[in-house]
Amino acid sequence: MSDSEGETQSELEALFEPQDTVESLTRWERMKQQYDLYIRAPLKVAINDWRTVVGLGLLIMFGLAGTVGVWFTNAPSSGQAPFLLGPFENWAYPLGTDALGRPIHTQLIHATPSMFQMILGGAGIAIGLATLVGLLSGFLRDTLVDRVLMTIADVVITIPGLPLVMVLVAVFQPRNPYVVGVLLGLDAWPALARQIRSQVLSIREEHYVEASRIMGLRTWTILRRDLLGQLTPYIAINAALAARGIIFGSVGLYFIGVLPFNALNWGVMMNMAYESGALNDTAKLHWLIWPMLTIFLLSVSFVLLSQGLDSVFNVRLRARHAQTAGEGDKSASKGKHDNA
Image (cartoon, rainbow, N blue to C red; front, side):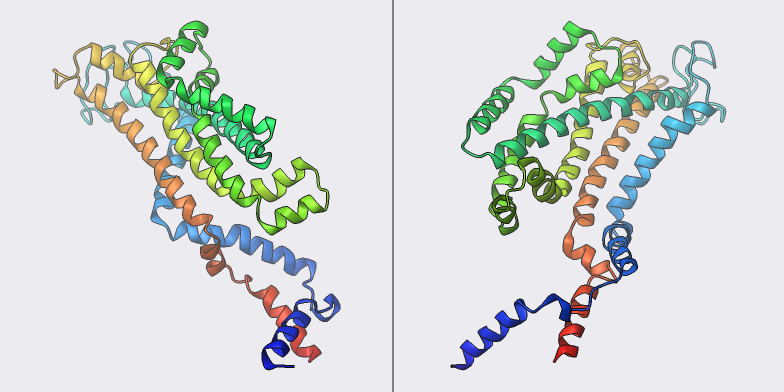
């Protein structure tokens, strides 16, 4: 027997080594390893990435404004404060007031909950539909289901998004923020569904997916356990980007007056400021600038968070920050050494 054949045989014997020679971890050690890999290490990666810190910090700030802030500030009403007060002239109204005597800062705060409701509705329907269609279509490649789903996606892609949303809004006249978000997200799923399908086509050829099929596992089990788990980072990053699209879409429709002015919204504030001539009057300019700055900060927070999540979901970075990442290998090596 040559040396190379002997080495190959040794490797095969090591590969099929009986499990009783390998030291197994206790339940507490397994829990510690899971905590380290899936909680502690991602948190360390997130803290070391300034994009995650800034993006998450801004989102927490908006979240506090939309939950706690509305309890500590009165709902804005006409004549509540002096008319067209400039920013920082009166600390009771730090961002100034509008032409109706309403504080700018309370309008921004009380418009935040409905904005998050629209984001949840829109991003939820877009990501949910895209994930379901992409997974099914990719896993059932070249079947009738695949052809039907991709045909529907291609048809929706060819329809201009903005005119479609404007027609739907004109027909249904939505007043609930969740419904507004759902209508805005209806044209956002096809492109992402095609991207997820491409990812699935690559993953479905992996050995562990093939093993699941040979073992006779149900399709939903394979989709959930083998495919969705691998695609979760990709879907999470696209969810943050979809939220940014919902923000721009809703504010734009409120600004041009397509959506009814039945609730506080940053787009409504911009519309009223623009209609009152804020672009040509410096005394009213702050009425237009503060909502624009708020939209910019919320959009930047989602972009930075999506970029930071790319690092958090990076397996190599997580393993580098995990203290117990090599314990399984160490225990295996120790068992092998003791056996020898």
